[in-house]
Amino acid sequence: MRRTTTLSAPSPVDGQGDEPTDPALQVHDVSVAFGGVRALDAVSLSVQAGQVTGLIGPNGAGKTTLFNVITGLQTPNAGRIVLRGRDITARTPVRRARMGMARTFQRLEVFGSLTALDNILAAAEFRRGWARDGSDPRRVADDILDRVGLREVAGERVDGLPTGLARLVELGRALATRPSLLLLDEPGSGLDGTESAALGELLVETSATGTAVLIVEHDVELVMRICSTVHVLDFGRLIASGAPSQVQRDPAVQAAYLGAEGGSTATGKGVT
Ligand SMILES: Nc1ncnc2c1ncn2[C@@H]1O[C@H](COP(=O)(O)OP(=O)(O)OP(=O)(O)O)[C@@H](O)[C@H]1O
Ligand SMILES: [Mg+2]
Image (cartoon, rainbow, N blue to C red; front, top):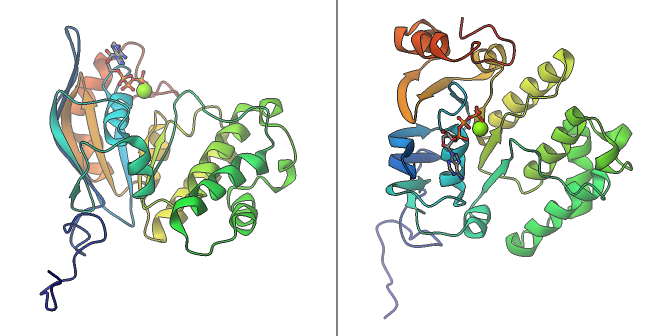
């Protein structure tokens, strides 16, 4: 029977979530084991809209595994993933994408035989297929070329571009779906100092439009500069969460980084 009065409007998906106070993402007690390896051990954290949040930790800490659980590529042994108040643990990666999740991969995933523009356009058209909001994919892709700074190489095949630019193509493709949650797995790797500074600005600008950005990055300087909150994983466990300066001073974090072979950062400088 049709209800005529409601105290609050039901959400379009399943009647819960999307309250203004809901974090963009909540990870509750997520565990993943690969044979005897505990890749994630009861990890809980949250990510807020309108901010860049960092996820750091030494090699093998479980960062990519957590991204795979969040995006639905890896089923957790335990725990829940909640997107804007809705439990999405059982949803497919495609459903999650439609709900506003986009990611980039540590091992770059782009269409090498397509141009930079066509990679981005493909994502904008993919989005139009479900969003039906009248957006023009060509205009969306065109705006993104400028935003990510790819205008000059728009017509070039991506497999002929340097890694730094190919990473920006992948980022542009993620942005073309207009995500509410953007997950980036080491977007700074392969970028030089100028490109990395531009990436930082772009991510801060993107978060300022309301998108929640979660970034895995070994360039600790970049993380400390652009993140409002940083979560630290070590051997699958969350060992610290807080403001960058607070996390940097945390003895457990310093010990994890000193214990990591050769320091843990791409720059080899550890966390300080
Ligand atoms: N598919 C898999 N099968 C078996 N073990 C895996 C698999 N994926 C990850 N692991 C193991 O799980 C642990 C966490 O790996 P993960 O790739 O999540 O770490 P990471 O923090 O992303 O590391 P890096 O900084 O090197 O990218 C590691 O011990 C890794 O060897
Ligand atoms: Mg990784």
